[in-house]
Length: 71
Image (cartoon, rainbow, N blue to C red; front, side, top):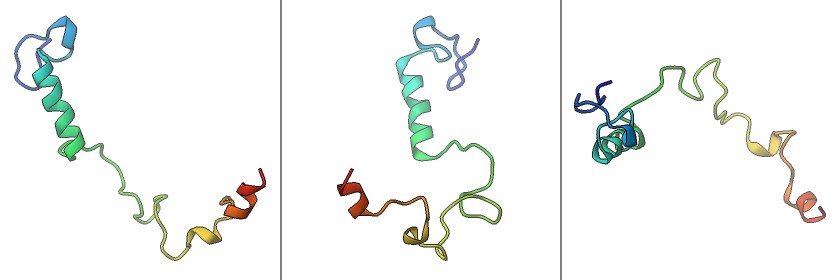
């Protein structure tokens, strides 16, 4: 198996990468948003994202602070 970052042979300790450096490069790309999983963005039509027309206080599943103080 080749390292997905540099194409060198993968090392057992860092599989599927060849080194800690390549593993860190991959992690950095995920954290910066260079990689993305395809799909609808949150909030787009049909998605379950933020809806500005329905503020959190209208959410029946939201508990108010007073009821949390009594528990």
